[in-house]
Amino acid sequence: MNNSNQFNKDEELSLKLFIVLTRALQAIENQVTQNIKSYGLNLTEFGVLELLYHKGGQPIQKIGEKVLLASSSITYVVDKLEKKSYLAREACASDRRVTYAVITEAGTKLMDEIFPKHAKAMSEIMGGLSTEEKQEAIHHLKKLGLFAVGIKGE
Image (cartoon, rainbow, N blue to C red):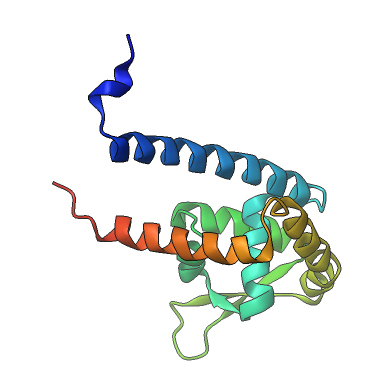
């Protein structure tokens, strides 16, 4: 028996789109994770270093929301990166309750070396789309995400 008769065409396409997006994301994440691991980091460590590398020192409490990580995991990741000498903690001069994570010289040197390689790998991983198709995908996925955020739960 074909269950697709119980769904209209839009519902069917919406279900298929979800599956295709999920599988594509899984495949991309697997490739990105392999790339990052080749530099001796995990995805979260790389995300934190990349944030500090491009945006400068950040309050540790704010890093989680910027790299989509639970706040409970941030301290662990910061500790690991500090042990590797890639970042340091610095107290905020104006508010003693706030501690910043700051990339060190060793962290900057590492990112100077690996970030261009990572950018090339990302280009290769996303090579299934042309430049124009990437722009269109970004536009459509942003639109989809913003719409989904606006839906109110029951």
